[in-house]
Length: 513
Image (cartoon, rainbow, N blue to C red; front, side, top):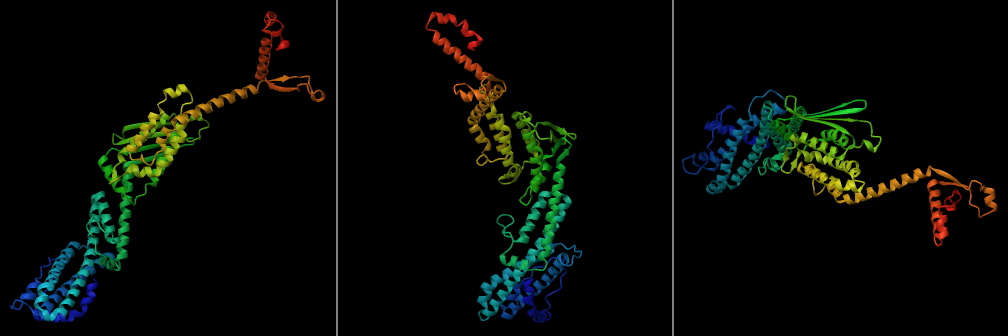
């Protein structure tokens, strides 16, 4: 397109040459462009084995004329599609084929101008160098035209793939469109999209903004279509009642279709926040925090879906007695992972779907699991400690999460650290239980009080400091004091046989306690 302006100054002279030699004919745009043998005319056209400067220049200008006409047709094709939005059924393949033919001819001409042409026409070095620069400008213009045509071809391929609902092909085509439009270095690894010069000129074209808008429309429509298909294959429902909630997860058993949709949907631009929030708030957190009734079926809807239903109360638990058993919590988590296992496919070389979901939910899930489920499940007595399998169960769950790619064993160490600190948790809970038991005994004992020295009022005690003041003490303290007095008195009298006999007499009377 840029070369068009550079060629206009030569068009009048070219028209005269065309009338003299009568060699250029109008060609229909749908016919295959014949190969124009410019080298033979340039170097053998006059029968002397080597053409003069005028013959070579004439051949070059004829190529310029063909390029000019070709680019005019390309300009009209692009303007119809992206500026005027007129109906245009012309395939870009015709233009791409003609562009390739012109590219080959110009490259051949440049090669011969650099060797045979310049050697044979020493007197025309300056003119030939100028012609070479002109040809390179033409190549740049052809490169821009071809770049736009390939984008147009990709848009047509997108429409064809949408008709067949081949979502993986659609995803690849949209990715290639992004590479061509935004100037990514490569599409297929080492295949360069365009040179920096072509990209710079392409971004300055009038149709560039329109092409970008069309690309974003196609990308958005693809994502919406993939999301709709995913919602039909993975059905997540939540029904809330005044005091309870029922959550249903249904996953299609058509693994081929399901994994194609998931693989196409879970690409880098996709944000799974809505899915992760649903799983965390309605499934994972209630399973850990509340008693949950789970119903799992592999033959739902005539065997086409795997279904998991979770029912639980929404009212906050009032005591630790309502805390679910840790074994039931781990079993429900396994059921949840097993139900969703169909979507856990690889979306890239080193990433799976559960890994993407895990990045959003694993931190809160592990914290809740350790703080609200595992630590309260640590035994409080020696008998419970000897029969507990908590460490083994936690290790199995951690391995399941690692195998499912939800956690990274080298970075997510919450469960492993719990197992390492298990002995400390056990001793702390056992000591806390002992202290709580002792406190309960003391509190019960303080509720059973007796009066001591009922006749020693404050006035009497003030006059006689040797009197014990009237007060209330626990009955256990009184019994303990009386027992100590009895033991001391018995020890004092144990040295005489009479004293031993008297222990069954007055020492046991109420006067001695």
